[in-house]
Length: 89
Length: 337
Image 1 (spheres, rainbow over the protein chains, first blue to last red):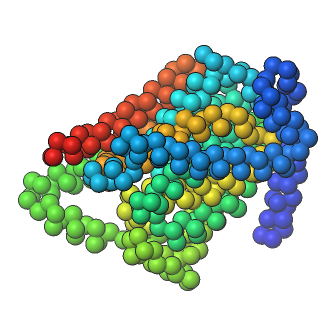
Image 2: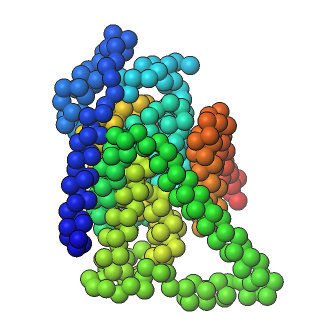
Image 3: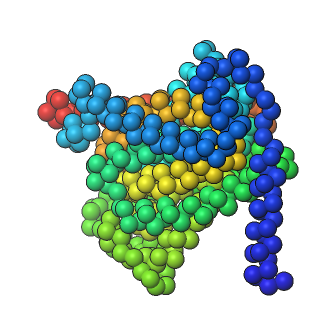
């Protein structure tokens, strides 16, 4: 077997096993015991996995940037913002 | 302690633990220039998340947290964007390969043990290496002081030392503005690919490996390595979130709670990096790596409480040291010292 054949076989194996692994997801959750936002997220997760993945990226990066701005403003207000700390060096 | 049922993973979890974990990892992440996935993933697993969910959720938290931290580091002017872009983009391929391997191991029911072994070997190995390097440097400095040639000898050593990866001259070559060294594009791409595979397997952004690689193998100054690795971690974390989300292994609610805690912690950690530099950072980093490795071993032997105490206690102590150093600097400034 040459190197190209070996790589091809490895890629086929990885693709098949990934599909197999994706099927082995967790069981049902009783949605009456979670809040409305959590219930909606679980519904998107069950029905539209691609959008759940996309939503995860958008929410995490968006929330990260937003929280970063808010905490920076808050820390500046109490005299601990980036500018103040850099000048203290 | 304010527990909620998490809708995707289907387990009860304390919101306070998620917030505290996010805050602590935010401080360490902002300070060490890592997403903190190497703390979050074992922590979530120790507290009851299945390993593949701990990895996916850890990556989601990293994506948000490192986006937040790298914006702050960029503002401070510490980022080498050329290095960050090349390594970050090549990490994407590695993360995808790592994810496929994890799903394969998950389907065969051996993911927990496999990932624990990888964690132990990598964190333990890296921590030990950095600790030994720190001890050797301290011995050299003591010797220099005794001989009375401290600054001169240190400058000579830096000149003589040519980092390993800069010795490869396979074109195309890239000049890095942060350190003025020329490095092969293939070397940078290969580094990103290798770290990406590890990141995909371990559920971390890969910053834990990038910082020492940038410093020891390329010769980038420590504080630039810290900041630049965050850019790479943002890229790999974002891609990892998407690809693990497709595989159904991201618990978004838990990741968002952790991010809320991390928002405050990251601001403090990123600012503190100005006050403790060079070998001080490396010593703290080495100790934290060794503690994380020890907690993974304890978890493997079902010692859940000591494992949780080791990783959370270690994280807490490191946070206190970092925040304490920053406030000391502020007090010195206020008293005119």
